[in-house]
Image (cartoon, rainbow, N blue to C red; front, top):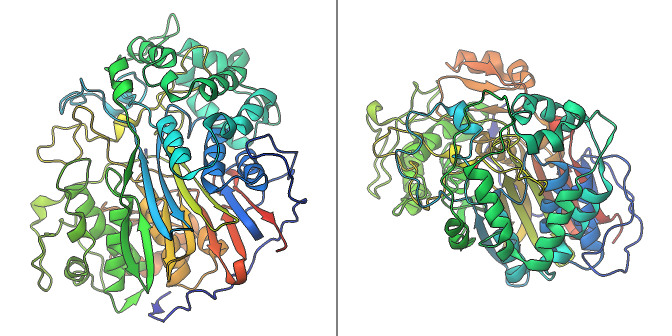
Length: 590
Ligand code: GLY
C-alpha cells in the first residue's frame, strides 16, 4: 500500500495488460474528410505507432483517428473528436459549452494552453445567484454562460492546427447525419434527464422522440446539428459570436421554450448578443510543477485543475513515503487552498501555491492520522516555517459536484500532444436545446459560488469565468512527452488525475491498471467518497487512521496516453466506467 520513494526510470517503463489493436493501412485522402468504417466495438487500450487517441466514445475516437491518418495533426484531430462528442455525448459536451486544452508542441518543445471557459454575461453580479436553489439554477437560462468551445476550436486550429474549422467538423457532420448507435450510457443519461427534457419543446422533440428516450441499439440522428456544424464551418465563429446563431442562443436563454402546461419555474438568463461579441478564447501560460524529476503541466485559473493537482504533487514530494493515506491528505490540504485562493480573479497566488516552500509547510501537517475536518487553508505568503496552520475559521467548504464533462487525449506522428477537457457542466447542461439547431446550452454558471460568501474568489461578476476543476495534464521528462491524461467528474477531476499519477508513479501500476484501479476522492470534505473496490481494499486501514469513507459508485472516466520506449504509444480509456471508453492507434507497427 505504501511505496517507498524510488528513482523511477523515466523513459523506460513498460506497462503490462494491454490489448493490441490491429489497424488497417493509413488512408491517403486529405485530412478532415470522413473516415472509412472502423472498429466495431470500443476497447480501452491500444498500443502502436504514428499517433493515438483515447476518448469515452468510439465514434469520437474514430473521428480523431481518421484525421490523423489523413495527415492532420493532434490539434485538428482533437477538434474533430470534440465536435463528434457534441453529437454522441451531447449531455457532456457541445458547441455551446466550454473547455480547457493543454497542447505540447513537439517542434518547439513547448506546452501551451487555451482557455475556452464560458463567461458570465456583463449583467451578472455577485448577487445574481444568491438565494436561488441550486436545482432551480441548473435548469434555467440564468445559468447559461457565454459559450467558449467554438472560439477555442478556431483559436486552436489557427495557432496550432492545419485544418480550417469546416474540415475539422466534417467527421462530426457525418455522425450527426448518418447517426450513431444508442448505447446504455446514452439511454441512461437521457432517462435521468427525461423529467426536465420534457419541459422544453425543443429538447423533448430531439431527445425524447415519441415521448421516451431512444432505445438502446437504435440509430440516433441529429440532422439539425449536422446542419448547424455545416453552416458554422462555412460562416465561421462569427455566426455564433454576434451573428444569427448567436441571436437564437440569446433568444433561447432569455425566453426558454417551456412546454405548455409545464409547472417548472424556469428563470430567464442575462446573456445579450454583445456578450457573445465580446467573447474570446485565451492562451494562458500553463501551470508547472516538477514531480520525481518529471515536469507536470496543467491548466491555470480560471481552472483550479493545474494549481490543485500541482500543489498536491508538491506536498506528496515533500513526504517521506506515499500511499493512499498520503494521497488523501495531500488532496485535502490542496483543496483547502483551492477554496480560499483560486478563481477568475486578479492576484491568485499561483507561484506561491505551487512553490516547494509552501508545499513543505503544508506537508508537515500530514501525520499518521487523517486531519480534522475541515482543514484550514494555508498562507502562501512566501515566508514558510515548519507546520504553520491557519485558524479553522478560514476553512472554505468544497461544494458537491456531479459526474459531468468529458476528456480526450490525442497525439500525432510528429509527437504533438493534446489533453482536452470539454463540458456543458451538468450532464445534459441546462436541459434546453436551441430550437432547430440540435444542441443543448450549458449551465456552467452554476460552477460559481452562489453566495453570500464575502471574499470568496469564485463569486460571479460581469464577464467573469466560473472556477473550473478541469485538469487536462501533460507530463514531460527531459522535455519530451511521457504521459497525458485527464478526466470528467466536477471537482473529482482533480483527485482522479492525482490518483492516476500516484497509482502510476508511486504505486508502480501500469497505465491501464492506474486508470482501472478503484478511486477515492477527498476534497476537504468530512467524508472521503470512494468506489466499492477502494473501500474493500483500503477501508479498514484508512478507517483506523481516522478517515471516514462513504460509497460513490463511480468516480471519473479518464483517458490517457503514455509514451513508451522507441516511439511506442499506449492509449488508454476506461474499461467499465461510463460504459467504457475507446483507445485507438494509427498503426500497430512502425
Ligand atoms: N464543469 C466542470 C468543471 O468545470 O470543473
